[in-house]
Every structure is written in C-alpha cells, then in structure tokens.
Amino acid sequence: MRWSSIVAIYTLFWAMSFFFVLPFRLRAEGEDQIVPGQAESAPPQFSFARTAKWTTLVAAILFGIYYANYVYQWLPVQSLNWVPDRVLEGN
Image (cartoon, rainbow, N blue to C red):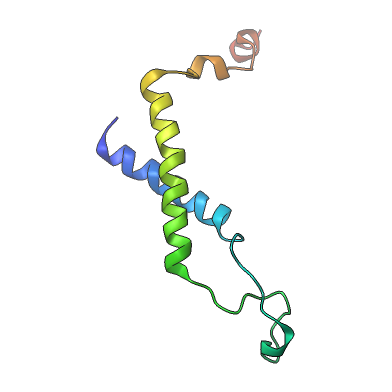
C-alpha cells in the first residue's frame, strides 16, 4: 500500500472517529451555570484537544485493524461478494 493511500484512508478513519468520539465525555453542569439562550443539556466546556486526542487513538486502532486485515487477508474481498455471478453477468 502506498503512503498516499495510507494517509488518505487514515484521514477517513480519523474523520469518522471524530463523530464517534464527539458525544462521549461531555457532561452538563448544574443549572446555576446556564447562560440565557443555552440548552440545559449543552456542555459547559468543549475541549477540542481532548477530543482530537481520543479521536486519534480510536482512528489509530481502527486503522491498525484495517491495515492488518489488508496485509494478512483475514477477510478477503472475495468473501464480501454477496451478489451472485449470474446477476452481475446479466443472465
């Protein structure tokens, strides 16, 4: 696999993982700190650095599993062919 492919696929895993990690570790404070116009469930502080750290960790694990499967062929592409050949050939 080329380095450009590794970077592109890891970037996709990172973006996907960001939306997976985003709702975790957010805790709303008590009602006494609510700003007018703010939802009660809104987090009082959002740390992009903490979210990016966890996202990088999750993306690295997922990409590691993906790359290991690519190298060792645990689940080859041919096993994912659920469409019968006769349908693809048009018969």
